[in-house]
Length: 126
View 1: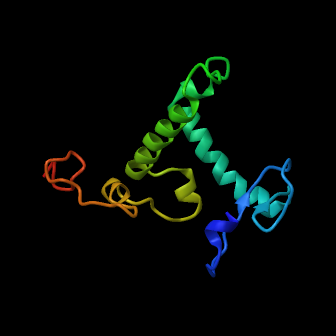
View 2: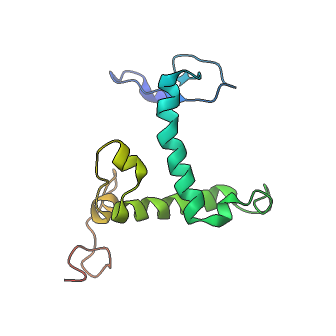
């Protein structure tokens, strides 16, 4: 984080568990402010486990037996796509609407236009 933020005016920090030490990059603690930040993050994980029941079976997910990081990544990716179409508790809490699926898919530094023949193109079902 330090190297990525060098010579940049806006500095980001990581919210860490109390097992970590607090420094200029990691913020830890159990104060009300930290708890208020962590709560919406926990809602997102609750959504993930609600949508993908497989993610809640700790005895099924075993390190070195399944590609857990890939399973979590794909599950969260699909959950995010679902949120763009249906909203969620976090968006309601912060009084903001998530982007549309089309906007969400077209974001990023390597963003490209959505092909006209794609089911994700805004005019596909028109």
